[in-house]
Image 1: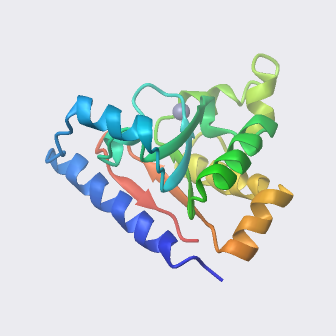
Image 2: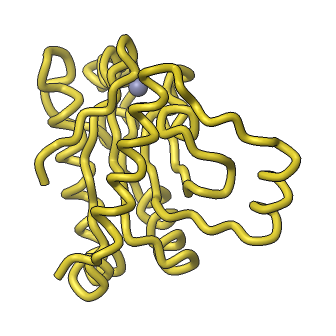
Image 3: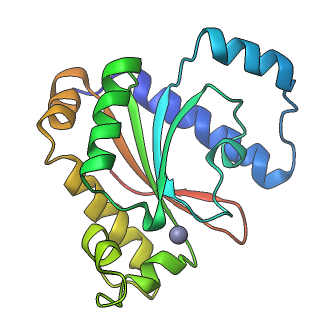
Length: 180
Ligand SMILES: [Zn+2]
């Protein structure tokens, strides 16, 4: 069972990314958006992505504050704190969608190859860390790890929450949808 909302929310994000790529971003009024989100934050998606300064989800999806529950760390790795944050976000906001989004030219994934220097990064990420498939392999690894959480697995199974993999291209701004 998949929530009817989930594909629609993902489509909404992809459309926002189209505006971002084309340089046709919506101009939000900061005062209005702050007031709206302070009173009634209604994120429709949880986004797990890298802490890389080039990867800013609200810009990439052309969305105002209050619309995404964002979790970022080096390499978009999944550890217990990320699982806890996803679990919390799902419960609090009843979001129908989790986006796991890696990106091209990810320095954190390259650094993770050096397990002596960055053991925690090596632990939370995986796969061939350089090369064309690195980002995608890491997204799939992250999704598998999220699904080991009983709470997240139950949300997927019983509430139809969709976990969508994606790759952000730092050169073009385009977000590639990975097959589910
Ligand atoms: Zn990165």
